[in-house]
Length: 431
Image (tube, rainbow, N blue to C red; front, side, top):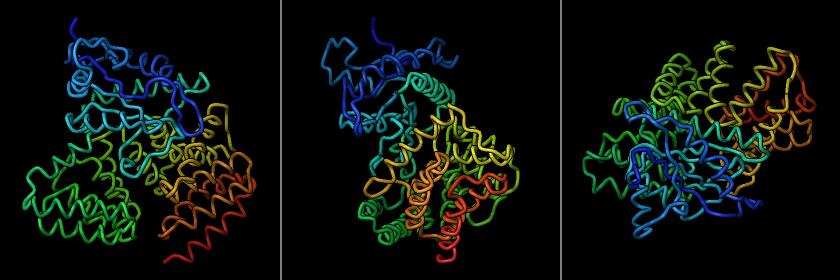
Protein backbone atom coordinates (compact mmCIF):
# COMPACT_ATOMS: atom_id res chain seq x y z
CA UNK A 1 0.00 0.00 0.00
CA UNK A 2 1.43 3.43 -0.92
CA UNK A 3 2.46 5.66 1.96
CA UNK A 4 -0.10 8.35 2.87
CA UNK A 5 2.17 11.26 3.68
CA UNK A 6 -0.76 13.38 4.88
CA UNK A 7 -0.92 11.11 7.94
CA UNK A 8 2.82 10.48 8.33
CA UNK A 9 5.10 11.69 11.11
CA UNK A 10 8.64 11.16 9.88
CA UNK A 11 11.10 10.59 12.74
CA UNK A 12 14.58 12.06 12.27
CA UNK A 13 16.94 10.53 14.82
CA UNK A 14 20.08 8.42 15.24
CA UNK A 15 19.77 4.65 14.89
CA UNK A 16 21.12 2.03 17.30
CA UNK A 17 23.29 2.88 20.30
CA UNK A 18 25.20 6.15 20.23
CA UNK A 19 27.25 8.21 22.69
CA UNK A 20 25.51 11.27 24.16
CA UNK A 21 27.73 13.13 26.63
CA UNK A 22 29.17 10.44 28.86
CA UNK A 23 26.37 7.93 28.27
CA UNK A 24 25.54 5.22 25.77
CA UNK A 25 21.99 5.79 24.53
CA UNK A 26 19.88 3.16 22.77
CA UNK A 27 17.90 5.28 20.30
CA UNK A 28 16.00 2.26 18.96
CA UNK A 29 14.57 1.76 22.47
CA UNK A 30 13.61 5.45 22.58
CA UNK A 31 11.84 5.16 19.23
CA UNK A 32 9.99 1.97 20.25
CA UNK A 33 9.04 3.04 23.78
CA UNK A 34 8.60 6.82 23.51
CA UNK A 35 8.32 8.29 20.01
CA UNK A 36 6.30 5.60 18.20
CA UNK A 37 3.52 5.17 20.81
CA UNK A 38 3.30 8.93 21.37
CA UNK A 39 2.93 9.58 17.64
CA UNK A 40 0.23 6.91 17.23
CA UNK A 41 -1.76 8.57 20.04
CA UNK A 42 -1.95 11.96 18.26
CA UNK A 43 -5.25 12.55 16.43
CA UNK A 44 -5.22 14.35 13.12
CA UNK A 45 -7.43 17.45 13.02
CA UNK A 46 -10.92 16.65 11.77
CA UNK A 47 -10.51 18.64 8.59
CA UNK A 48 -7.62 16.34 7.64
CA UNK A 49 -9.81 13.26 7.59
CA UNK A 50 -9.50 12.05 11.17
CA UNK A 51 -7.46 9.10 12.34
CA UNK A 52 -4.07 9.44 13.98
CA UNK A 53 -0.53 10.22 12.93
CA UNK A 54 1.47 7.24 11.68
CA UNK A 55 5.20 7.04 12.56
CA UNK A 56 7.86 6.33 9.97
CA UNK A 57 11.63 5.93 10.22
CA UNK A 58 13.83 5.15 7.24
CA UNK A 59 15.43 2.04 8.74
CA UNK A 60 11.98 0.61 9.59
CA UNK A 61 10.55 1.14 6.11
CA UNK A 62 10.82 -0.94 2.95
CA UNK A 63 12.23 1.11 0.13
CA UNK A 64 11.33 -0.03 -3.35
CA UNK A 65 13.58 2.56 -4.97
CA UNK A 66 16.53 4.72 -4.03
CA UNK A 67 16.76 5.30 -0.26
CA UNK A 68 18.01 8.85 -0.76
CA UNK A 69 15.03 9.74 -2.95
CA UNK A 70 12.60 8.12 -0.51
CA UNK A 71 14.16 9.98 2.42
CA UNK A 72 13.81 13.33 0.66
CA UNK A 73 10.20 12.47 -0.14
CA UNK A 74 9.55 11.84 3.56
CA UNK A 75 11.18 15.18 4.46
CA UNK A 76 9.28 17.07 1.80
CA UNK A 77 5.81 15.55 2.03
CA UNK A 78 5.26 14.21 5.57
CA UNK A 79 2.51 15.97 7.49
CA UNK A 80 4.84 16.19 10.47
CA UNK A 81 8.50 15.61 11.30
CA UNK A 82 9.87 14.83 14.76
CA UNK A 83 13.63 15.24 15.23
CA UNK A 84 15.91 14.24 18.10
CA UNK A 85 19.18 16.22 18.12
CA UNK A 86 20.69 14.41 21.13
CA UNK A 87 24.30 13.61 20.28
CA UNK A 88 24.32 16.18 17.44
CA UNK A 89 24.30 13.46 14.76
CA UNK A 90 25.38 14.96 11.41
CA UNK A 91 22.67 13.15 9.41
CA UNK A 92 19.99 14.36 11.81
CA UNK A 93 21.11 17.99 11.59
CA UNK A 94 21.29 17.77 7.78
CA UNK A 95 17.78 16.33 7.54
CA UNK A 96 16.40 19.03 9.86
CA UNK A 97 17.93 21.64 7.55
CA UNK A 98 16.27 20.05 4.53
CA UNK A 99 12.93 19.88 6.33
CA UNK A 100 13.09 23.51 7.40
CA UNK A 101 13.93 24.53 3.85
CA UNK A 102 10.92 22.81 2.28
CA UNK A 103 8.18 23.05 4.95
CA UNK A 104 6.91 26.16 6.72
CA UNK A 105 5.35 24.21 9.60
CA UNK A 106 5.00 20.76 11.09
CA UNK A 107 8.42 20.19 12.65
CA UNK A 108 9.22 19.64 16.32
CA UNK A 109 12.70 19.13 17.78
CA UNK A 110 13.53 17.24 20.95
CA UNK A 111 16.73 16.60 22.89
CA UNK A 112 17.72 14.74 26.01
CA UNK A 113 17.70 17.13 28.93
CA UNK A 114 21.44 17.43 29.51
CA UNK A 115 22.45 17.63 25.85
CA UNK A 116 24.09 20.92 24.84
CA UNK A 117 23.16 22.84 21.68
CA UNK A 118 25.83 24.38 19.43
CA UNK A 119 25.89 28.11 18.72
CA UNK A 120 24.57 27.90 15.15
CA UNK A 121 21.27 26.23 16.14
CA UNK A 122 20.78 27.35 19.75
CA UNK A 123 18.01 29.73 18.65
CA UNK A 124 15.87 26.79 17.52
CA UNK A 125 13.45 25.55 20.18
CA UNK A 126 14.22 21.98 21.29
CA UNK A 127 12.01 20.31 23.90
CA UNK A 128 14.04 18.54 26.61
CA UNK A 129 13.06 15.00 27.60
CA UNK A 130 14.46 12.17 29.70
CA UNK A 131 13.91 8.42 29.31
CA UNK A 132 15.33 6.98 32.53
CA UNK A 133 13.90 5.73 34.86
CA UNK A 134 10.66 4.34 33.39
CA UNK A 135 8.56 7.13 34.99
CA UNK A 136 10.52 9.65 32.94
CA UNK A 137 9.82 7.69 29.77
CA UNK A 138 6.12 8.03 30.52
CA UNK A 139 6.50 11.78 31.00
CA UNK A 140 8.46 11.96 27.74
CA UNK A 141 5.66 10.18 25.84
CA UNK A 142 3.12 12.63 27.21
CA UNK A 143 5.36 15.58 26.29
CA UNK A 144 5.83 14.35 22.71
CA UNK A 145 2.11 13.65 22.32
CA UNK A 146 1.16 17.11 23.61
CA UNK A 147 3.69 18.98 21.45
CA UNK A 148 2.61 17.15 18.29
CA UNK A 149 -1.11 17.51 19.02
CA UNK A 150 -0.88 21.25 19.73
CA UNK A 151 1.42 21.83 16.74
CA UNK A 152 -1.06 20.14 14.41
CA UNK A 153 -3.93 22.19 15.82
CA UNK A 154 -2.10 25.51 15.53
CA UNK A 155 -0.20 24.81 12.30
CA UNK A 156 2.07 27.78 13.14
CA UNK A 157 5.11 28.77 11.10
CA UNK A 158 8.03 27.00 12.84
CA UNK A 159 10.80 26.87 10.23
CA UNK A 160 13.56 29.45 10.88
CA UNK A 161 14.50 29.14 7.22
CA UNK A 162 10.98 30.00 6.07
CA UNK A 163 10.72 32.79 8.64
CA UNK A 164 13.92 34.33 7.28
CA UNK A 165 12.84 33.93 3.66
CA UNK A 166 9.41 35.38 4.38
CA UNK A 167 10.95 38.39 6.08
CA UNK A 168 13.32 38.96 3.17
CA UNK A 169 11.03 38.00 0.29
CA UNK A 170 10.46 41.57 -0.87
CA UNK A 171 13.71 42.97 0.46
CA UNK A 172 14.71 46.15 -1.43
CA UNK A 173 18.32 46.17 -2.64
CA UNK A 174 18.63 42.47 -1.80
CA UNK A 175 22.04 42.13 -3.45
CA UNK A 176 23.44 44.80 -1.14
CA UNK A 177 21.70 43.54 2.00
CA UNK A 178 22.65 39.87 1.87
CA UNK A 179 26.45 40.37 2.18
CA UNK A 180 25.86 42.65 5.18
CA UNK A 181 23.72 39.99 6.88
CA UNK A 182 26.41 37.39 6.24
CA UNK A 183 29.04 39.71 7.70
CA UNK A 184 26.84 40.19 10.78
CA UNK A 185 26.47 36.44 11.29
CA UNK A 186 30.20 35.90 10.95
CA UNK A 187 30.85 38.69 13.46
CA UNK A 188 28.55 36.93 15.93
CA UNK A 189 30.47 33.69 15.48
CA UNK A 190 33.56 35.66 16.53
CA UNK A 191 31.54 37.08 19.46
CA UNK A 192 32.07 40.59 18.06
CA UNK A 193 28.75 42.22 18.94
CA UNK A 194 29.67 45.81 17.99
CA UNK A 195 30.63 44.72 14.48
CA UNK A 196 27.44 42.68 14.13
CA UNK A 197 25.31 45.62 15.30
CA UNK A 198 27.00 47.94 12.82
CA UNK A 199 26.42 45.51 9.93
CA UNK A 200 22.75 45.00 10.82
CA UNK A 201 22.16 48.74 11.06
CA UNK A 202 23.79 49.16 7.68
CA UNK A 203 21.56 46.40 6.26
CA UNK A 204 18.45 48.20 7.52
CA UNK A 205 19.58 51.52 6.14
CA UNK A 206 20.15 49.95 2.72
CA UNK A 207 17.16 47.66 2.58
CA UNK A 208 14.57 48.60 5.23
CA UNK A 209 11.41 46.62 5.83
CA UNK A 210 12.97 43.43 7.22
CA UNK A 211 11.34 42.28 10.47
CA UNK A 212 13.88 39.52 11.08
CA UNK A 213 16.80 41.97 10.91
CA UNK A 214 15.02 44.31 13.32
CA UNK A 215 14.61 41.41 15.79
CA UNK A 216 18.25 40.35 15.50
CA UNK A 217 19.41 43.90 16.02
CA UNK A 218 17.03 44.37 18.95
CA UNK A 219 18.37 41.27 20.70
CA UNK A 220 21.96 42.40 20.26
CA UNK A 221 21.13 45.88 21.59
CA UNK A 222 19.50 44.20 24.59
CA UNK A 223 22.68 42.18 25.14
CA UNK A 224 24.74 45.37 25.45
CA UNK A 225 22.18 46.97 27.79
CA UNK A 226 20.57 49.50 25.42
CA UNK A 227 16.96 48.58 26.22
CA UNK A 228 15.28 51.64 24.70
CA UNK A 229 16.99 51.10 21.34
CA UNK A 230 16.20 47.38 21.55
CA UNK A 231 12.50 48.10 22.13
CA UNK A 232 12.46 50.49 19.15
CA UNK A 233 13.84 47.77 16.86
CA UNK A 234 11.46 45.11 18.16
CA UNK A 235 8.50 47.48 17.82
CA UNK A 236 9.50 48.08 14.21
CA UNK A 237 9.51 44.30 13.67
CA UNK A 238 5.96 43.89 15.05
CA UNK A 239 4.72 46.77 12.91
CA UNK A 240 6.20 45.24 9.78
CA UNK A 241 5.03 41.72 10.58
CA UNK A 242 2.14 41.75 13.11
CA UNK A 243 1.98 37.92 13.36
CA UNK A 244 5.67 37.51 14.19
CA UNK A 245 5.33 35.81 17.60
CA UNK A 246 9.03 35.90 18.47
CA UNK A 247 9.17 39.65 17.88
CA UNK A 248 6.25 40.23 20.25
CA UNK A 249 7.90 38.00 22.86
CA UNK A 250 11.24 39.79 22.73
CA UNK A 251 9.50 43.18 22.72
CA UNK A 252 7.52 42.24 25.84
CA UNK A 253 10.60 40.95 27.64
CA UNK A 254 12.53 44.15 27.00
CA UNK A 255 9.56 46.37 27.92
CA UNK A 256 9.35 44.56 31.26
CA UNK A 257 13.05 45.13 31.86
CA UNK A 258 12.51 48.80 31.08
CA UNK A 259 9.82 48.91 33.82
CA UNK A 260 7.04 49.21 31.24
CA UNK A 261 5.05 46.39 32.82
CA UNK A 262 1.66 47.10 31.26
CA UNK A 263 3.13 47.31 27.75
CA UNK A 264 5.25 44.23 28.39
CA UNK A 265 2.21 42.25 29.54
CA UNK A 266 0.25 43.24 26.42
CA UNK A 267 3.13 42.27 24.12
CA UNK A 268 3.67 38.93 25.83
CA UNK A 269 -0.03 38.08 25.76
CA UNK A 270 0.06 38.77 22.02
CA UNK A 271 3.07 36.43 21.70
CA UNK A 272 1.29 33.66 23.64
CA UNK A 273 -1.87 34.09 21.54
CA UNK A 274 0.22 33.66 18.39
CA UNK A 275 2.24 30.74 19.79
CA UNK A 276 0.79 29.03 22.89
CA UNK A 277 3.79 26.65 23.01
CA UNK A 278 6.34 29.43 23.57
CA UNK A 279 7.44 28.63 27.11
CA UNK A 280 9.74 31.67 27.17
CA UNK A 281 6.80 34.00 26.52
CA UNK A 282 4.71 32.19 29.15
CA UNK A 283 7.48 32.33 31.73
CA UNK A 284 8.25 35.99 30.98
CA UNK A 285 4.56 36.82 31.35
CA UNK A 286 4.71 35.04 34.71
CA UNK A 287 7.58 37.36 35.63
CA UNK A 288 5.54 40.48 34.86
CA UNK A 289 2.58 39.16 36.85
CA UNK A 290 4.91 38.45 39.77
CA UNK A 291 6.35 41.97 39.65
CA UNK A 292 2.79 43.30 39.57
CA UNK A 293 2.04 41.33 42.80
CA UNK A 294 -0.44 39.08 40.97
CA UNK A 295 1.18 36.01 42.44
CA UNK A 296 -1.60 33.47 41.88
CA UNK A 297 -1.76 34.39 38.18
CA UNK A 298 2.04 34.25 38.01
CA UNK A 299 2.13 30.76 39.54
CA UNK A 300 -0.36 29.49 36.95
CA UNK A 301 1.67 31.00 34.12
CA UNK A 302 4.90 29.40 35.41
CA UNK A 303 3.06 26.09 35.66
CA UNK A 304 1.96 26.36 32.01
CA UNK A 305 5.51 27.25 30.99
CA UNK A 306 6.91 24.26 32.89
CA UNK A 307 4.43 21.90 31.24
CA UNK A 308 4.97 23.28 27.73
CA UNK A 309 8.76 23.14 28.05
CA UNK A 310 8.91 19.70 29.61
CA UNK A 311 10.46 21.02 32.82
CA UNK A 312 12.67 23.97 31.83
CA UNK A 313 14.58 25.18 34.92
CA UNK A 314 13.42 28.82 34.90
CA UNK A 315 9.63 28.35 35.21
CA UNK A 316 10.18 25.24 37.32
CA UNK A 317 12.25 27.17 39.88
CA UNK A 318 10.02 30.23 39.86
CA UNK A 319 6.96 28.09 40.49
CA UNK A 320 8.79 26.37 43.34
CA UNK A 321 9.66 29.70 44.99
CA UNK A 322 6.11 31.03 44.67
CA UNK A 323 4.82 27.81 46.21
CA UNK A 324 7.31 28.11 49.07
CA UNK A 325 6.27 31.71 49.68
CA UNK A 326 2.60 30.75 49.89
CA UNK A 327 3.10 27.61 51.98
CA UNK A 328 5.95 29.16 54.01
CA UNK A 329 7.88 25.94 53.45
CA UNK A 330 9.75 24.10 50.70
CA UNK A 331 7.56 21.21 49.59
CA UNK A 332 9.70 19.05 47.32
CA UNK A 333 8.08 15.70 46.53
CA UNK A 334 9.65 12.86 44.53
CA UNK A 335 8.39 14.18 41.18
CA UNK A 336 9.74 17.68 41.83
CA UNK A 337 13.00 16.24 43.13
CA UNK A 338 13.42 14.30 39.88
CA UNK A 339 12.63 17.41 37.82
CA UNK A 340 15.24 19.38 39.77
CA UNK A 341 17.81 16.64 39.22
CA UNK A 342 17.23 16.65 35.45
CA UNK A 343 17.23 20.45 35.34
CA UNK A 344 20.52 20.45 37.23
CA UNK A 345 22.10 18.05 34.73
CA UNK A 346 21.03 20.23 31.83
CA UNK A 347 22.19 23.48 33.42
CA UNK A 348 25.52 22.02 34.51
CA UNK A 349 26.26 20.85 30.96
CA UNK A 350 25.39 24.32 29.67
CA UNK A 351 27.40 26.12 32.36
CA UNK A 352 30.49 23.98 31.72
CA UNK A 353 30.34 24.31 27.93
CA UNK A 354 32.99 26.44 26.22
CA UNK A 355 31.69 29.07 25.89
CA UNK A 356 28.83 28.63 28.38
CA UNK A 357 25.32 28.50 26.95
CA UNK A 358 22.82 31.04 28.34
CA UNK A 359 25.01 32.74 30.96
CA UNK A 360 24.46 33.94 33.64
CA UNK A 361 21.11 32.15 33.91
CA UNK A 362 22.53 28.64 33.55
CA UNK A 363 24.79 29.38 36.55
CA UNK A 364 22.05 31.03 38.61
CA UNK A 365 19.63 28.15 38.01
CA UNK A 366 22.32 25.63 38.91
CA UNK A 367 23.13 27.59 42.08
CA UNK A 368 19.49 27.52 43.12
CA UNK A 369 19.17 23.80 42.44
CA UNK A 370 22.22 23.24 44.64
CA UNK A 371 20.55 25.38 47.33
CA UNK A 372 17.48 23.16 47.42
CA UNK A 373 19.67 20.05 47.53
CA UNK A 374 21.32 21.33 50.72
CA UNK A 375 24.62 21.98 48.93
CA UNK A 376 25.62 25.32 50.48
CA UNK A 377 29.09 25.39 48.91
CA UNK A 378 27.67 24.59 45.45
CA UNK A 379 25.08 27.35 45.79
CA UNK A 380 27.72 29.95 46.63
CA UNK A 381 30.15 28.71 43.97
CA UNK A 382 27.66 28.89 41.10
CA UNK A 383 26.22 32.17 42.34
CA UNK A 384 29.71 33.70 42.14
CA UNK A 385 30.28 32.23 38.67
CA UNK A 386 26.96 33.61 37.46
CA UNK A 387 27.68 37.05 38.91
CA UNK A 388 31.03 37.05 37.10
CA UNK A 389 29.13 36.69 33.82
CA UNK A 390 26.72 39.57 34.50
CA UNK A 391 27.13 42.58 32.21
CA UNK A 392 23.95 44.47 33.12
CA UNK A 393 22.53 45.58 36.45
CA UNK A 394 19.14 44.00 35.79
CA UNK A 395 20.66 40.51 35.73
CA UNK A 396 21.70 40.30 39.42
CA UNK A 397 18.61 42.37 40.32
CA UNK A 398 16.43 39.69 38.75
CA UNK A 399 18.15 36.97 40.77
CA UNK A 400 17.87 39.02 43.97
CA UNK A 401 14.13 39.69 43.58
CA UNK A 402 13.47 36.03 42.82
CA UNK A 403 15.33 34.77 45.89
CA UNK A 404 13.52 37.25 48.10
CA UNK A 405 10.35 35.27 47.42
CA UNK A 406 11.87 32.68 49.76
CA UNK A 407 12.73 35.29 52.38
CA UNK A 408 9.21 36.75 52.19
CA UNK A 409 7.82 33.30 52.89
CA UNK A 410 10.14 32.76 55.84
CA UNK A 411 12.04 30.05 53.94
CA UNK A 412 15.82 30.29 54.28
CA UNK A 413 17.78 27.25 53.07
CA UNK A 414 21.35 27.00 54.35
CA UNK A 415 23.60 29.41 52.43
CA UNK A 416 20.91 31.81 51.22
CA UNK A 417 21.82 34.60 53.65
CA UNK A 418 25.47 34.29 52.60
CA UNK A 419 24.63 34.54 48.91
CA UNK A 420 22.46 37.65 49.10
CA UNK A 421 25.34 40.04 50.01
CA UNK A 422 27.29 38.75 46.99
CA UNK A 423 24.38 39.65 44.76
CA UNK A 424 23.92 43.06 46.41
CA UNK A 425 27.61 43.87 45.89
CA UNK A 426 27.36 43.01 42.18
CA UNK A 427 24.28 45.23 41.76
CA UNK A 428 26.20 48.17 43.23
CA UNK A 429 29.17 47.46 40.99
CA UNK A 430 27.25 47.55 37.70
CA UNK A 431 25.98 50.80 36.14
